[in-house]
Image (cartoon, rainbow, N blue to C red):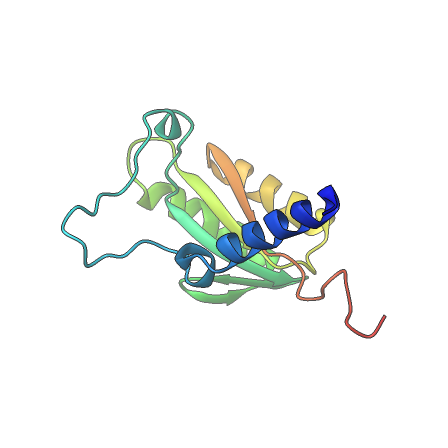
Length: 137
């Protein structure tokens, strides 16, 4: 027989082994096992920074805090109170932004947070809901 035939048989066997494995069909870790342990890394903590305040921004003038929806003018008044409420240490702000938020709005928010006394601003950006590929192509 031909060598291509055997290569195809080996590749088909590999595909069935990989795509039929339990991890591919249901990824994750079984929590009911007695030897369960969470993986840890000392290097992961080296760059870790805690945040003291979290806000969400969905668009222009659509900023949500734990106190409710705010405009940028209201946020400029609210942010310094959060810095003072944080006590000692270096307070940091975590901004969760949707895909529709412009860079201008993010910079405006970052400038307001730094002016209020936050030591830093971290961004958690949400991806766009639209896929780059469509089934109709």
